[in-house]
Length: 256
Image (tube, rainbow, N blue to C red; front, side, top):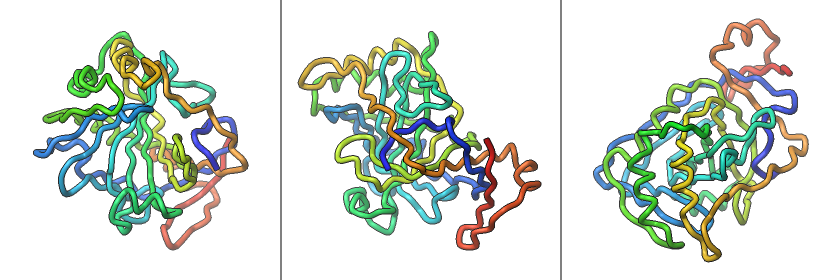
């Protein structure tokens, strides 16, 4: 069950999950962050003790934020698509299950990883909330290089705190070894990213030259259920037949 996938070409399973609870994702961290060229892309690593925490939605327990990965192309750089539409860029907040103690340990478990994916629409206007991060890209042009970031480098994540509708499905890491251990939460509504800012990502290099795009092709769905949560449709959900899962207490209906 590989990722990414197309999210809207099949009937969806509507769910009413508990609210997502974010803790520390966009804080001004004294320890700062590490911005790194990891050969196949750009990664922000969270430094110090007390990593950000996420629970709720399809996650029955705490998941800790390890790092954020970025995927880009030209104006269609996202790896997931909605109704065949690709976005300018996609970022993945990669979390590990707290009980496993670390990201490395969690990658050995079937339920170890949760990824929150967010989209960015390519725009003539820059995303000023990402200015600190984008400015740092000039310092990691060479593969394997890294620099520290401080201050408001990750404040742009706060934009996604208010999104109350998203897709969720079981999939894989979108890069080798593509372990099928990931619970995806894919936010439906995008932020923006400046076309000029995308060009700065494209100046990051691999051993073969500038990394113009690092998208993985869309993978077959293979009969997987795709869940859709939309709190703004709560009235509609409550009027339809439901199945109650007492362990997590989610309510399910199917719509096209």
